[in-house]
Image 1: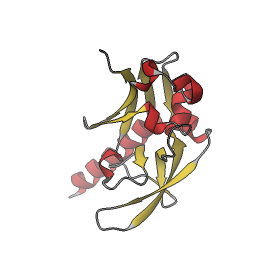
Image 2 (image 1 turned 180 degrees about the vertical axis):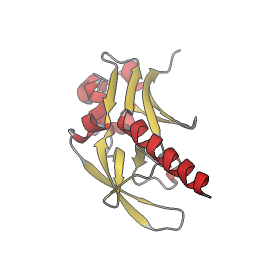
Image 3 (image 1 turned 120 degrees about the vertical axis):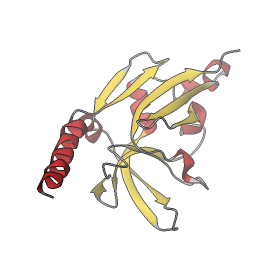
Length: 162
């Protein structure tokens, strides 16, 4: 029993440095690829989003608007996004378990659509659990939370090719 206790403690302690050393990558068709630490994200503007769980309970998430992160990598937004070439661009969100979701840049841009999508690190005033964090995409207002992904590791910008 004592060995089991030490295994649990050691496992927990090994997760703390993993969270501390975490970097959110922004890559693909970007002018400035990025690797942002959790402390980098804490310095950016914050926004809240509400998402219901499977039982129908509402939870308030806090995080950085996804477009603010993308703008740091010089991803087109606003007037620069308009036009056939940039309307075919997307962001592929990769998670540590292999799960991936896709958003068009146009649907994330506030000059085109009023969609609240954040990269959350807080839920109901507390950090995300290890199983769901350190970061989660929250797409507020979607009927199914399928794109509100856990354990986000990378944002990859691409475009549809003819």
